[in-house]
Image (cartoon, rainbow, N blue to C red; front, side, top):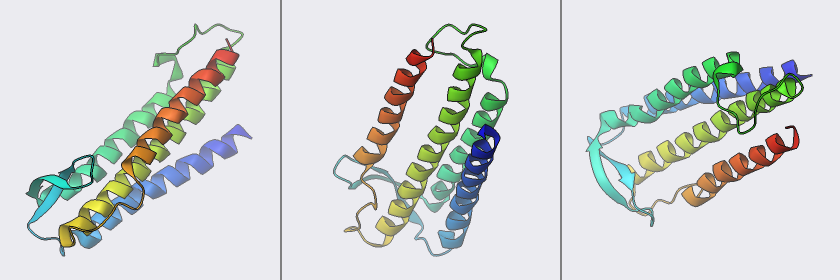
Length: 155
């Protein structure tokens, strides 16, 4: 059962990565030469750069994908919030493998949301992000707290 879950996550995450690259390449030609590259807490652009910066999100997402792929293949090399013993090893590694895949999904969705907002803002300063950044960040923090609680249950 866990292999099916891992396969679903891996296909979903790879699909999100491919979609992010496709989205960026598709809209790159239409972008103005200068695009917003950073936003303040109010959602207003406070830093601008060349449209080449539009490839930053896909490159970072690809780097995370490779890093996380190596992490789930070698769970012994990771840090855990509890001591790994023979009794809890299976449960802790399972939790870590699921969480890393879930975390990548959230990160890629945040990158997609940011990329979409950056592209729309480049043409319309009144554009709003589809998902508020606070919601995105809280989802990551909530997930981390949840996994720490679950991990503590399987000491």
